Length: 388
Image (cartoon, rainbow, N blue to C red; front, side, top):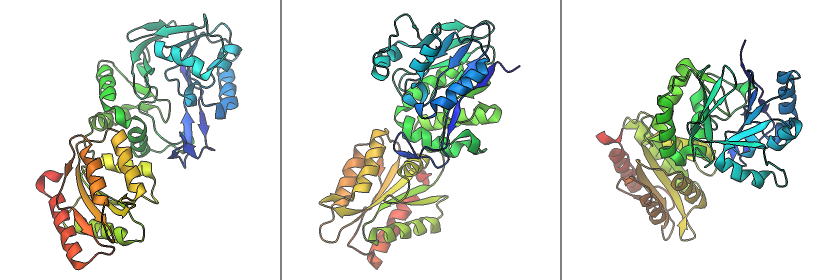
């Protein structure tokens, strides 16, 4: 008999996760029930799917009453049903971190939690009978109150938002990394040091399965690969060889230069070249590619004495995600007073351990033969032996 039951829900109606990430294949809000002498609910779900979650819980309980509700993360897509669950089962206790306890009034104003909450910290355990939960502090992965829990009998890590991915379970494929990568860099990407701390704790445990709050359960080779990738990602190391060429073009001149640079890089043997239109492509996916490859070229038109806004937005996203350890090329365009290069250089120089590869290429409205020669020099510099 499987003592850990899935009671989560898929959300196929959502268009933007966290109001910013496109999720064409929906999201899963994962929740579990551990059956033993005492019964523990592991997280709730988003209120958007509250009725479905409550129905799943009722069916799994089959008339029994839960003893504990463990909240690993207070974000509303996992915790918005806490008060309703406590009202439905008045003898049940909420288990969470002390930091989460402080956050409860933020989300449940007026609900009386007195006597209903058990706070836990790093190393604390909770016995359910044959099953024991060992709690692991995971602050800033990716909120300060986050805890994870390790179930010692089944050797399962309940990983909160760690190891999650975009996409509903009904659409799940074998390619975990694609949407897990986009999810990680855009949601957890800033917190590489904190993720490394958790990975070190996890290395001391015999983990046979990871149960994330979004996405599939990871076991076997999939689990090993997920841990391998998380180690690379959280150390800010490139995952694959290649170059991202990201462009911000107003009337097509900068776009033409960026596409030509992509061709030159391929001709010179770049193992992978991704050319992205910042005005039209999914920003979260371009951020993913920026972290994936060791080299990035920013091509942008000048605008109002600065840089075209979508490029500024892109570089700002990289800055707030703690982007580092990469090589940049710069291509600017300006019809009368090019300014984009200066702004891009300043934003890049503010990032940690990022090198700017020369020459910076300046185009006046439309690419000329001399500009293509400069693009070729930049491509050559980007293809230097230490680039990959």
